[in-house]
Image (cartoon, rainbow over all chains, first blue to last red; front, side, top):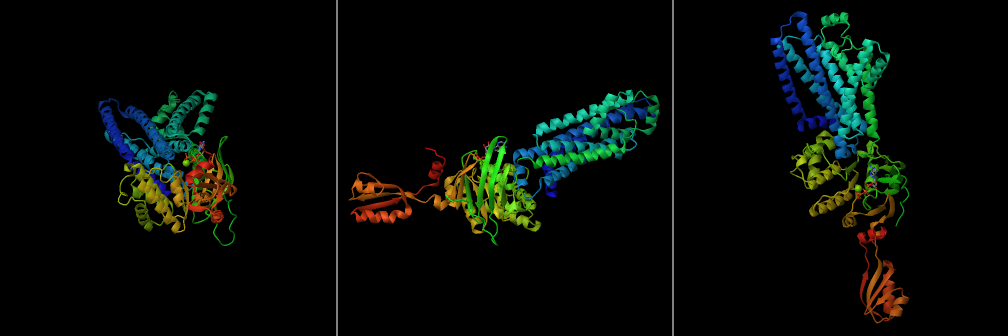
Length: 278
Length: 308
Ligand SMILES: Nc1ncnc2c1ncn2[C@@H]1O[C@H](COP(=O)(O)OP(=O)(O)OP(=O)(O)O)[C@@H](O)[C@H]1O
Ligand SMILES: [Mg+2]
């Protein structure tokens, strides 16, 4: 299993995936730094209004960033699993005394290092450069980054499971659609809660259970928002239902379910791979 | 044609391969139809058949890459797909592909690790395997820069790593040049000499004829012929050049006479040739030549498949 993990990491290095991720990270951080520095220079807002402005901007930035690493996770995982099965490389490897579960877990570990490393490094870079140029830092950056990374890993796991049976393109597309669908359902859920529409709430809850990626984003979002601002907003009421604001932390059950969900999906992937002809 | 022998009981190790009514269906299509085989240890076993006959399917079943939909089988005394058995098997797939972003040595190193070869011995094992397949000196190049034949040689090296007890080769010379084909024969002889069993899928009947001890032929998923190579190629029929005997006398002996002096006995077993010669001489005939009809595997193959 560790050998497969090692090979997966070498593959991402040799195929210049890591290099590309590193280069895009630099580009992203540089551009973010420039944009936040400009806004910081030009804004006339002060005090809590300034904090509110940067909070909204940062949440929006991190949402884009989340989408970016989610897509990175999807495409990396699809190519790594389906690519090897389709090309025939896996036939030689799986003829070795290696269980298919160990093969998939090894791939999972290797990809988790690449994707998770990218999410953590690029995400820290973003938060660091913002705090540096705009003197604004979210309250709990570590928790937020951990949750965003966890979301990417969940999506990676889903794509891997799909890619044990579907082609690379198909599994990537299905996982991407799933990601955006979860986001839409999450927004429906927020609206349902705000407007007290039971049918929307039910659909939102079901979506959260089927694919908890968006729930992790909402959890991360909460840790990006200054508490003072939240208490201000809460009295207001109008912002509930806004997908760019999380009013409270996600219950621990959601995080536990996300972890269980990941294990179940990886298990399904192992089962799917086990029954596949190579 | 022989039937699979019964189990050699007692202390002798189980046969390298034993399958019983092994079957694989894809939907309604039967890719392999009740394959029953016994391949004793230390033999080179040829598995022949036309395209789509089910040879690759059988190999994948043996390695556990595909699950059987019926029947059962044992490889090296263990159930199909058992990792402990796969530790002792080397495999060259029909569609050989290796990580093109690794060097040849790294591919072998990875396979050596997966095969459970101790770390200290991996390098040496890899280099020995490369040398055996004629790739010595190419090990530090990326596999992506190899030619197709070089990739197949690399695949052979992967299959030979760590001295496996059973080597399964699915058309190992499909991409090789004539020298490579010759080398592969040598490799198979060496494998046999060290007591390993070879299971060879091939369309190159001259190659099979040269190296295999035993063959099975399948067509549309069914075994249509099986036996020892020497039995299968045993001469049947003899052609003579004779003088001094009449056409009637040749006919009476079961032969056909074509003037001026050709006599053929198409049904005669090779062992009956001396009696025939004696009979003709007894009748006062003078024999100029005796030519037993030795079948080539190719002729046999076409006969079995009823190709006119
Ligand atoms: N994954 C699959 N799905 C459906 N049918 C399959 C599949 N794999 C093989 N078959 C069918 O099983 C039969 C046997 O295929 P197999 O690859 O074993 O043939 P083969 O004897 O190795 O042929 P060749 O000499 O061309 O390599 C063929 O009819 C093929 O169409
Ligand atoms: Mg084949």
